[in-house]
Image 1 (cartoon, rainbow, N blue to C red):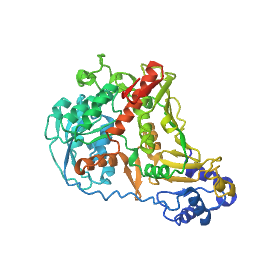
Image 2: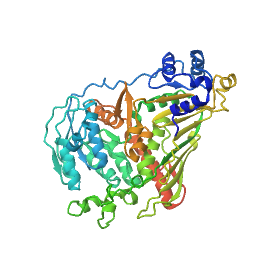
Image 3: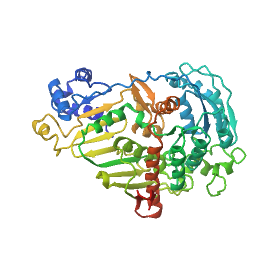
Image 4: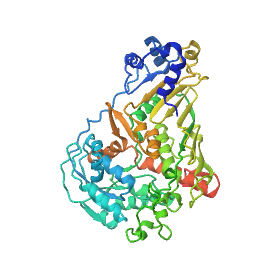
Length: 525
């Protein structure tokens, strides 16, 4: 994806007068735009950058009176009540979640990673419990939770306990809330049991693998007073909030098609992760891993390092690209448009490149129909090409490409903007507005997966010039709701809608048929 800034740069090179205009001057001029002017707001006008033209564009778009207020990261109160958190599962994702809470492993401290948490606001939490079936991971969790480093004021030194089973942790009254970061086939059952035990739940996606367990989870949470938050953090992005205002103001016109995509092209991104950088097997054996507990309710399979690290490849533990990648796409679209459960879904694909030991397709395409919204959502994922196709909302009057930036292009056949196009105020050949989180530095992240998630707006966002982890903000929202009441953004209603959509897509792929949602019987048919 070419960013608006890059595209602007390339056009400058071929456009005489504009190429002479220093970027500093351009930004300075844009700062004069009424109300808007924050967070990299830009109007990319092809022929002229004079203030009058920019104001005309704003008026044409209906944004001349918009108030895109800056987020206030430091204005959250009531962090006074300590929340004691237990981690169920402490692998790679849990390490990131712990960092978002303000905890890093001592080895990471030596690498200077403590600077990240030192820049975060204190969430006033203590990690007091670790449960993992793998001794190595459990020890990492204990070391991380016990690491005595302040995250903006935390001066706690509570003991940290390892639990051999998650049921033992849930039975402990010294745990207030749990974060579930296990392989996906455990998520629903652990969340249900946690809610029944009176623990607040933050659960990583995907929410559930079967319709039965999803329904049970939904009922259990609805009948409780606990706060449930699903691990989708894009709603915390400043750029996402600007996109929501754009949608709310109907800048795009009637939206009939949303295209979401995932493109990755490395073994690790295809969930082949059992080898280290030197090609050697990563650590793990039945002596170190409670394999029976790891399997849980899944059918028995003999232990293998391949299965332990690469569980995403098998249907018994996950839904592959649907559960790992599309879930983020659905959440982004549903949070913006509120489309809910689709009327029907059809999926197709196959194993076309990574022909190793796997059941999950590496090429997958799903079509979700919403006749009640006059809308189709398409998901297309490919694990053998890194060509970025983005996430695009297509309306009659304009389109919005939403990732780490939000870029709007006016449609050349727009009804609403026809006069502006004819007068030359609006140029449909160029992006007309871009919101960017200026402090994001996608090129600075190291791994291919990190770059993928950064490009989707799922890593950091800029608040008052400071880069802030959106997972930190998502956890903060969950904790604020625990302390003060309220409903988090990725609540059980949103999780249920997403869970049904994902199960429908997976079911369609496996059974090679169109599946539908019966809204009366509340079941997939």
